[in-house]
Image (tube, rainbow, N blue to C red):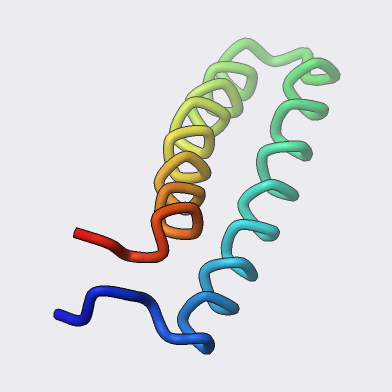
Length: 67
């Protein structure tokens, strides 16, 4: 594996990061508005997993794929 991400790979990771941030914002907002407890639990789980995904994507961008 190469030491650094290519430019196109960096751009794709940035696009994924932007999308995941949008999803996280929407799930957080909707969980505050949800009245059903089961839906609220699903949205809360999505927020938790989305936060982990965002941290992983940020790691790829800040370290540029260094191993």
